[in-house]
Length: 116
Length: 110
Image (cartoon, rainbow over all chains, first blue to last red; front, side, top):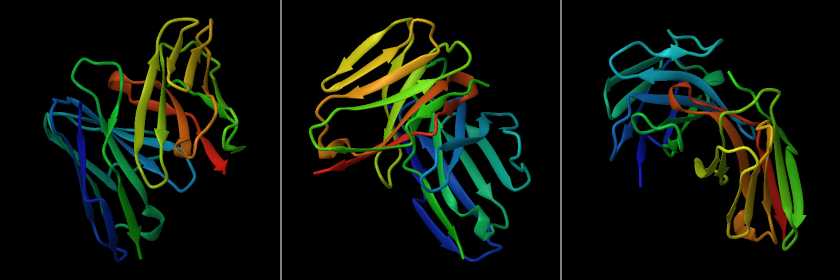
């Protein structure tokens, strides 16, 4: 079945550090990948849509200069949390679906980001 | 985008009891998907419903899509400890991403 790999799974770092999270579709091509954020006991909130070869589309209230997204190939999207602060601590999850498919989203394992 | 309301937020049941979570939308949905997220894990796709009035079963799980395509439910018969987790409905998909309901946290007491 379709597999999405997300790395790293856990990051603990000091305030002010920039953190890069990778999301890869391992056995299918994804022109579009999605980045979600989930706070404890809450639902997943869509942050941005990552489009291969073009600029990402950000949801209202999400700072594009804070959360840099790059989608350089059909199998890789990266999210960089720039100058992270404690309020950025959260669970970040990417998802992808195969090209042309409106159906199941395949999620990465998520990255738990803790900013001290 | 499409929005979905999901209730209840928490559900405590004794092992062996049934469980149901409900999703509602003010607009007609093109489809609805259900996901399960175990504590500390990521959402795992369970099913997608597309047709009006559709009913699908997966062992002890029964999924329904309303006739007006504005509501959906997930029913688990005779819960087991392995059913513990948060169940989300989600609308949308494709190029627009998914909009998730708030989820129902299922807590099972042995």
